Length: 569
Image 1 (cartoon, helix red, strand yellow):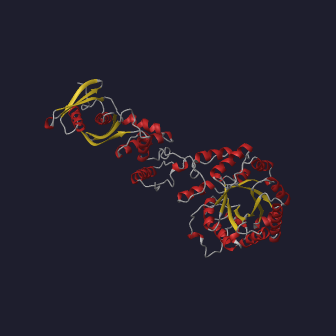
Image 2 (cartoon, helix red, strand yellow):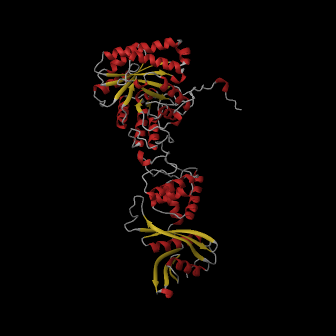
Image 3 (cartoon, one colour):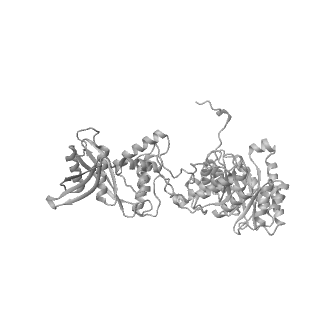
């Protein structure tokens, strides 16, 4: 048992809904989205947005395709009032976009709110008052009837003022604030009392917003609350049922998704979850979750990096590197087993030609949201052969055999452990080329000539050994085997080529590495009882293979001054 003060807290009581239906439902279309970045998000900032930042956020939300945007709390803030007037007076509201403004259910605040929206084509007036048992007791000191009276008087004034403003289509939204801490029968009672004032119809609906002002229980409980309201509210065809989850327990996204499954039509949230305390529900995560299930999110999120930069500029808050879909590291694998699976998944996808995205550990294609593949695999002390091999193949065209990839990854891992950090791509290439590629000392291949045919075929290898020119020769079925045979006879030690592979070496863009197509060759050579890898590159595939054998010898030759070491005669 811990020493945590559990006696101070009590569990949230579950909702009695034995025939709940939401668990068997799936989301097949996007909800109506409402951004509250300019109001709920803005009021939570250490430095609330000024006019320039507000306008930039407004334009970004329009670009994304939001059709409902809560633009402020104009009765509580002069900057909010001024911004609402600016976008109306300067004609900055597209015809298919509806602004939304928040107001408490107090007469002077409602009247000021209507001053702010005068001249708008269409506006949602979002009326709220708190209804929870806790706030009724400790904040307002009112019973249920007193709280209902506040809401009804507010809704009545909204209706009267809307009637005096026929040029603006006014939509009423009502929120029983702190809904999650409100008895369901009372939430139903107060919402229906507001409906009785507004008199909605199927063509003139009311928005009933059921906020998790404070997230108080697991997401399934919120879903039960929403389904109960969805099934029990009168005139359901006259209601847009909206949710506004906060993230106090870290489960706002799940709560919103389950709420939609439970009957919600509309979701209010912010970009990347900015908002009071632990934030609002993140609309970007919700939208891209839909994308990952093959459902059109009905928002344009083609460049998450640009979107992130806008949000960071406007909010003056960083987006976490692990934030879903947008964080710097979310498409990056350091784990060796993950890297191996991603590498194989990409290979299978290319070979299949399928349009369906199926790559392990990557729920969506990074390119769909404007991210590149370059940072998908990065290397640190936890990485294995696949990460190193991927970097060299993807960035430099080298297709390492498995044994070589394992050996190289061990060298890279040792460097990562020494530095206690990430090994950059250029460092991986430098380690690889320094250790394996075209190692020219003490043995370097200068030229190759072949003479004779059939059984009389001879291979001549013009080499330099410690800078002295020599000719090694041997008979053999092929030049690579013959070179190993000539080295073996010259050095007086058994030398055999166990593995040999080669390919054209291309850059990441698919263009040839040099003006002429360059080849890369890889060999594993047994030198006595020791095994050594070597890599050669050359315009000629044959010369690349001979250079690979020479590299393997130079790496694995017996230590000086052994009797079997090559000598310049």
